[in-house]
Image (cartoon, rainbow, N blue to C red):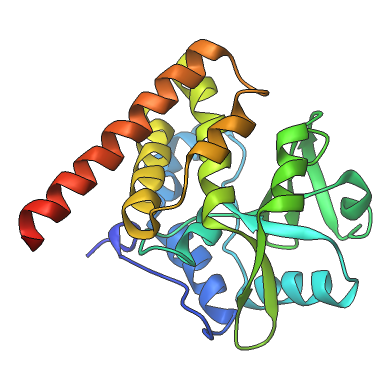
Length: 238
């Protein structure tokens, strides 16, 4: 079976080494590693990312803890603390610019007001920055901790994850980024079905940060999924 399609999860108490294994498995399964190899040889194209080193992933979280950096784990890794999912190729962190400056070892390769991309040794790291008002709200109101064997990692709550996914979707729709649209919608629907969080407060927060037309579409998606889950559970439990 392709490692890209292997179902994985990060339950409470698992070692941080499992995070590293998720990154390595995703790297090994990435078709871009080989599909462009002949062209790269002919055209001297940029080399593909190097294989993640497990110790680097573990050291990243240990360093964040030792320096008491304020951050939240979000993205694919955070999803795996709540649901069964697929391998992910990077670590997504939500933090302030001031917090980012506490980790000079994280080499930033690209950055704008709200997002940044960089590497911690061999580990790809994507950053959401709290200059975005909604991201700041997530750090303040939707933070918990996920206990790994070695240490507890600050992580976005289920509600925080849904909020971030919904906020991102309108931009993805306008880009016709169907691969990410499918992943983000699937993540939202899975979190809604498994954890049944209250969504009214989330939309109250979202309405201050996205267009009303976008909010209407997102409400429709969430409402339809909640109704579908309710009908299914009612049908097979009664």
